[in-house]
Length: 288
Image (cartoon, rainbow, N blue to C red; front, top):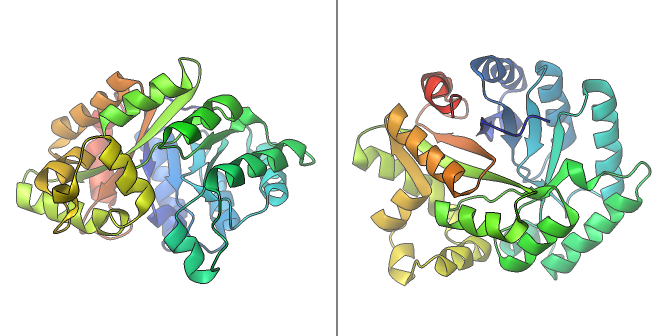
């Protein structure tokens, strides 16, 4: 799998119009983005992944993340094996425990002992027929214990909603031989007010989730940073806004901190498919 360079993390490729998602995937690959990342908050994840693999020839297709509460280990391993047989080794399974408020909203009490749940899920992938190799999976890991599990039982970590300081922490935790594949939200605008407005709109939900808030507190952010949609300091740390060169510089900060690959989540007023911004950013981002 090609897990260098810069990829695109996009809810549109997962939840947007299927025909446009397929067309956009082909264009993103042609623009030079090396991986396409999609979320999983319900619905038919496997159908969307298969469509992206069919629409591309060489790009890695990755889950950021596959929600372990929503798919059994056996069905995940079987689907991975089928896609690999059909499309080659291009499907990376990023696995995550999601967040208690989201999972318990529909299934009260389901979300328990996330670290143990992840270890049990990995056991299931190992014992599936056929198994899903540790080389083909990464973990959504923020805290030290999940990062340790990513080092021991996966190909590495997929940190989301983090600063370069956390990328450095992740690199130190997983060691030099594992992957660190970092997500970075970006907004292609030089207007500070517009960039921060997009950032706050994006972060509004995430800042209420304990996993992210606790990780940000470990990185030195305090109560004042979480009020009123997030302080300028917090928004600027998590969302790279500016021109193409400025955003490329922010991607480079994560690479310099130890990321093997950065997937850019483009925030825009253009809806689920910010294709103008994907095109405009491609020369700068795909050269890194």
